[in-house]
Amino acid sequence: MKVLLDTHTFLWATTGDPRLSNVAREIMEKPEAELFLSSVSVYEIGVKVARGKLELPDETGVYVLTRMAVFGIHSIPISAEHAVAAAALPRLHADPWDRLLVAQARIEDMPILTGDTLISRYEVTTIW
Image (tube, rainbow, N blue to C red; front, side, top):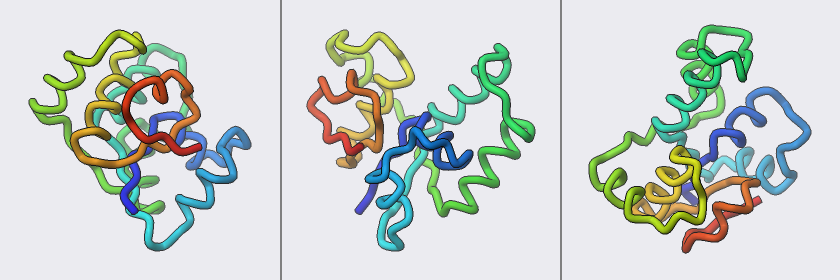
């Protein structure tokens, strides 16, 4: 099963945050689960760190890449097709990061592991 991680899902999983749902944790621990983190999430994390809205124990690149390796998470780049699809989405969610995740999940045919209820307003499978 391929699963796209929302940014908060990645952060909560890698920091042991109790807000990560039991279902999300179980899916991430399954050996057969293929976990993906979008480049947009990496960028979002970097922006939040730069603006002082998020603190990490390491530099952003080191933190993200080492945790991706530890958790066996694959990277998914942002393609022009993803960007076009995100721009065409109805404005159900104002967050540009999440709109790109929705577009990627739809195009790549993956559910999004997210606790963000606004994302579920789109025609995309969410798991939490």
